[in-house]
Image (tube, rainbow, N blue to C red):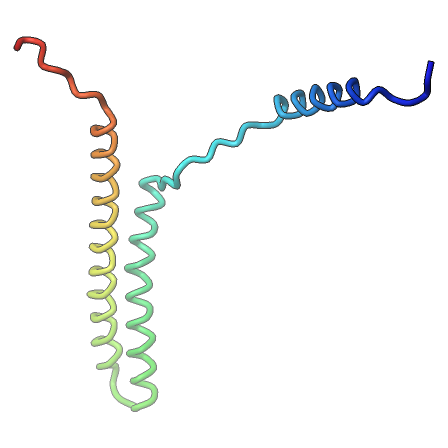
Length: 118
């Protein structure tokens, strides 16, 4: 017997090993990014609080710089609240459009029944 390996047998062995490795690999399913209702709610709360915080910070900073009574603090806190609510409403509208487009995609993918009575 010769000491040289048979190239055909080696190639078949490599193919079998590769097939077994591929079969044992964990299957990674990639789903579209779906957010839960809780994460969407937290996003909206954070947007509102961020608007309030930014408005408060600007108002407080102006009051400290100008040495006024907290008129700018109140004014900019209210403006921050309004901006936060507008951002929340925009987010809610965006989520509603996403949900509607997903529902439309599901119904469009479903097979329409054919008229059999004609």
